[in-house]
Amino acid sequence: MPVIALDTLAARIRAAPAGAGDTTTVAVDGPSSSGKTTLAAAVAARLDAAVVHMDDLYPGWDGLAAGARNVADEVLAPLAAGRPARYRRWDWHRGTYGEWVDVPPAPVLLIEGCGSGSAAAAPYLSILIWVDAPPEVRKRRGLARDGDTFAPHWDRWARQEEALFTADRTRERADLRIDTSRPHEPGTETVVCVP
View 1: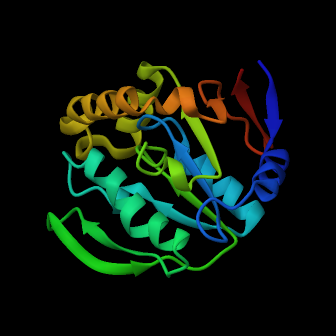
View 2: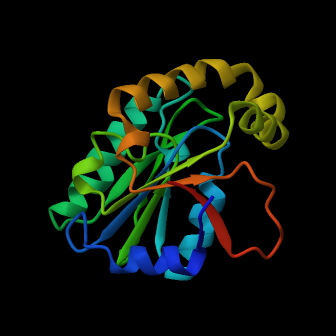
View 3: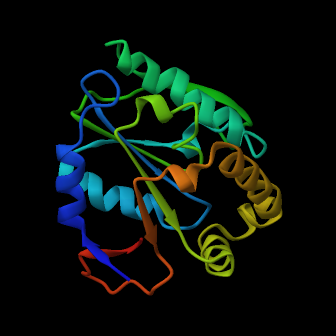
């Protein structure tokens, strides 16, 4: 499979046209525990980019579709209109909305998480990256990372992912598809791309 250096990916993002106002906007989407957060952090460090985490935008365990609308309405549309972006963070412990979070102005904004590349967000995106791995690999990673917190919700969240990704054709619309099923070697500066 072809590989792409993280520095090359960062250069590709840097060269992309702005998607929302003056901001180059990149969605790092894909199913749970596929490696979206890790990839976004590595790329953001190379670009000095702002990052919005979709986990802050879902209103609870049944809120994937609502989170996808929230990022379009509260973050991307204001940026496209030349206004500051902000969103209300979901407090997972209290089960209600918490404080408002201002999105720092930056030439590049990475939005990482399930639903970041939804149809609602598509008009504002410069690049859509799809990150994936086989279901058994992702479930093993997710439960190892989040354990008892995610275990009772895994299947219902997966059903929401499937519904949203199918309806919005997210994977098919992606500009770049990345397979994270191979073990990651510490210090590796490349990712495996799926043609």
